[in-house]
Image (cartoon, rainbow, N blue to C red; front, side):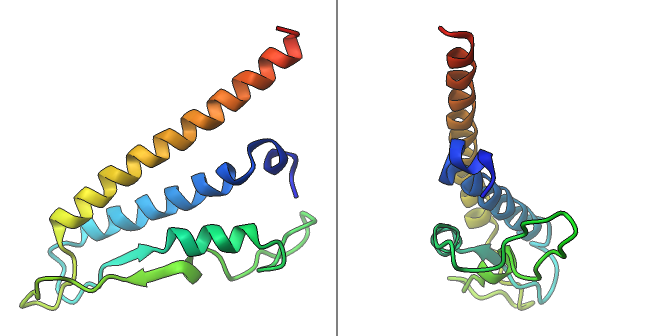
Length: 128
């Protein structure tokens, strides 16, 4: 466990999962007109509960170790559309844009929390 994990707790992992989710949502938005494109999403709760289970997954403890093949792909899910598309594309643009906006707000809130934590550490180091 890194010292950042001790300082930031679950917010470090939350930031990474939120970043990945925003990336997946933006890919969906970019492919809204692509025939047969399947809309994806990240199961945030599953990714976060897996990160809280210290025995789940592989942990890299040395720089010479190889990366595991697991990761956020394990938590990707396909969205089932409410309205069928004639070209078999499952992206519902309005829904994706709405989810991206919500996730952006959550991402900024997580960043703000981390910034506040760093500010508190700086003040403590200065003796304020």
